[in-house]
Amino acid sequence: MNPLLHKLQPYPFERLRQLFADLTPASEKSAISLSIGEPRHPSPPFVLEALAASLDKLANYPATAGLEALRGSIANWLTRRFALAGIDPAHQVLPVNGTREALFAFAQAVLTPGENGLVMMPNPFYQIYEGAALLAGAQPHFINCTPETGFLPDFAAVTEDQWRRCRLLYLCSPGNPTGAVLPQEQLQGLIALAREHDFVIASDECYSEIYREEDDPPPGLLQACAAMGDSDYRNCVVFHSLSKRSNLPGLRSGFVAGDAEILRDFLLYRTYHGSAMPLHHQLASIAAWEDEAHVRENRQRYRDKFSAVLAILDGHLEVQAPDAGFYLWPRTPLPDTEFARALYEGENVTVLPGRFLARDCGGVNPGESRVRMALVAEQAECEEAARRIVGLLLRLGR
Ligand SMILES: Cc1ncc(COP(=O)(O)O)c(C=O)c1O
Image 1 (cartoon, helix red, strand yellow):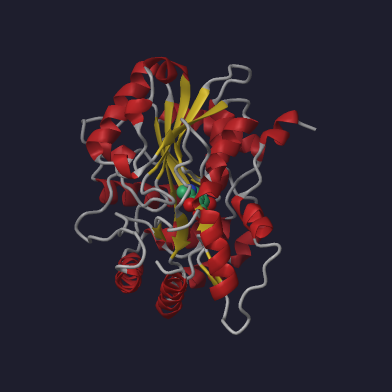
Image 2: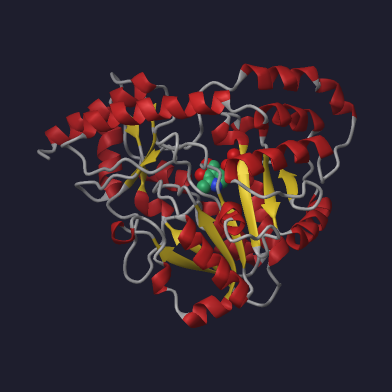
């Protein structure tokens, strides 16, 4: 077997299962899970109809590059959403089966075997970045996200030598779990560094459509290029998904877009990897990318939920409203693992200890004493969870 497999860390949900193994939750209270970031608002009916109407396409093999029509609607969406001067759907857009597989596969395609380059990523982080780096034989390099840097990666702490050794930089904006958004000027600074040191930026923007202010959407990496008058998007690739935007996590539909040379090679990799999107999923995806009404409605649901939950937690838990995304990242009055255990045992509410999402780096684990709460359930259930958290805090005398 590939010895690099042994470098993979246990996935956070496995660690959570072990953390709770000896506990029996309060059975008189219904179970509420805030630990998994799976969207639970209803999928748009018109997308399901488009999916059902194209089931006959199961008779055909799909092409890895995807349908021209899908790449066209994605290019139109990108141009509208990120104020691009243009993007070539034939060479600068590629459908993927959700961003998870693409974020993983991308590292395998981009990194040179045996080079042992650095793959930089935020800390805490989406676990796939680390696994992708390790299985590509590269070295993960974590950049802490703390309150001192507004929960954004502390890029100032990266040395010149580390930038020189960097081959791939994963960004996550809006961030999971912090909800922090990288401003456009900072993205432009990173683009300049990527071109100077010739590394690739993989910008995971899968939460970009869940934001608080309707007239202030998070900027994206391609937008930052466009604002510099650049439509080659050199060294830059973005990752987007219908999972959160359109409540379609089971459709496994997303795309990558950006630098045409990188995407040409990534397409070659994917052809061998065998990761073409089924045709009926592609046709349903076209319907989803071409509609914004359901996305606005989805954002409003999250906004209402965040306001209600934050009002309940106010004065009890140290927590701030995130810029975007659907997570809260509060500081806990006890160590995060103890807080999660007490909440599960006493209130039957599951949250994810922050340390499971981060690594020790520079003498700190930026997830310690924080938990991730995914507000994905319906509002009443999220409010009930918040009330139970307050109940626990009062019992603990906090
Ligand atoms: C930061 C981040 N990136 C990517 C993904 C993967 O999403 P999908 O594969 O559904 O597009 C997730 C899912 O939770 C995520 O949190």
